[in-house]
Length: 98
Image (cartoon, helix red, strand yellow):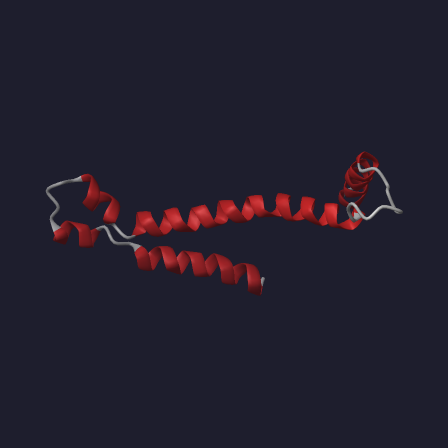
């Protein structure tokens, strides 16, 4: 099912791109590569945003900057960076070792 779905999608894209084999305007395969790079970069951007937001939230600086009367001992209690990095590495290594 998965392969036949992709065959249909690629056939649809190929039917929309005019075939100009005699012209040097564009390469047929390059357009498909650009489409693939464009769609595959969307999840990568989401993962990068997740990692940046996780690092920001786990450092404890968010609570420190929201409150003007910052007590550094309380800020140190909110630091959970080691837990975030542990779970991030666990997820990455679990995907590699699985």
